[in-house]
Image 1 (cartoon, protein in one colour):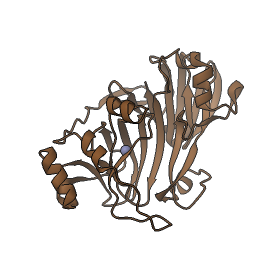
Image 2 (image 1 turned 90 degrees about the vertical axis):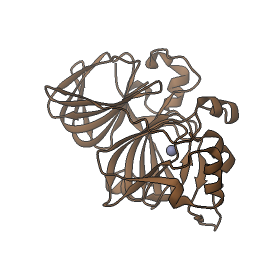
Image 3 (image 1 turned 180 degrees about the vertical axis):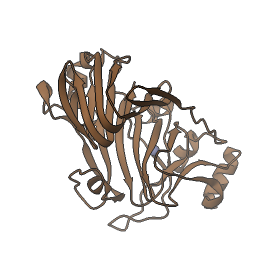
Image 4 (image 1 turned 135 degrees about the vertical axis):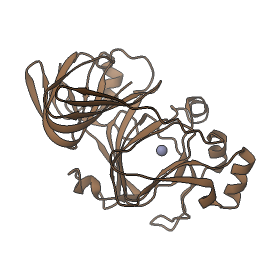
Amino acid sequence: MEPLFLTGVLQDKIWGGTKLRDEFGYDIPSETTGELWAISAHPNGPATVKNGQYVGKTLLELWDEHRELFGDQEGDVFPLLTKIIDAQQDLSVQIHPGDGYALLHEGELGKSECWYILDAEPGAEIVFGHNAESIADFRQSIEDERWDELLRTIKVQAGDFFYVPSGTVHAIGSGVMVLETQQSSDTTYRLYDYNRRDDEGNLRDLHIEQAIDVTTIPHQDQQPQKIVDAVAGGTLTTLVTNEFFTVYNWEVEGPITFQQDALYTLVSVIEGEGQLIIRGKEYPLKKGDHFLLPNEVEEWTLDGDMQLIASQP
Ligand code: ZN
């Protein structure tokens, strides 16, 4: 009957910065820390439980040994992954495959993802989509390195939300911090990396043929309609719901009681502080906390003054 509070895994990236420490207080391993894998059962960075009877276990171990926590969900892998990303520099322009291509070629899930923009410096942009009308046109633009013509960019600000289905050309631009909810996958095909070199002077690998294979051409924009529900105690917004995940933005100003209407629920506190209350037991919450409400938690209350991003399979 307890929530699983989690310690995530911080990942050094050539494009990372220090906001995961400066804004969220995490103990970052380097001045170029790009990602926190906050709620993760991916073998490349599983989060660890920090309270209760499963303290010290990773979410990956619990998925394998205690499937009842996840409502006996079927499948080989825990399907979701929550990250916080600090793009001090531009991320590579990339595409992720869908499930069919990824399972065949990479042996893991495909990757549809979505971004809640936590912070954006003035003028900050993302790359989202492309302007090619055909595969031939897409290939020619890449060969000619006509990136400015090919890539679409969008200016962003805090509070914006983007659904990024597999097959979408995308990049998070410098000065943007996001909370990402994604399928649990680590497969990325890099299309363009600004001819940037790492510490050792090497270019990172590109995956042009795979990228051409999986990119949706022409680009399709499928931004979901938000559903806003004003309730006593705050505002509950459904940001996206599809076959992979449902993602919510919960703005809490007073007590709100929730029912577990999915197999389990992942929650990240992105602003403010308050309490989580389960059967009268209180757990303090603050910005930067991440937890999972297992299947057996049928009802919970959030109280305080805070903003949270939640997701369900
Ligand atoms: Zn991505």
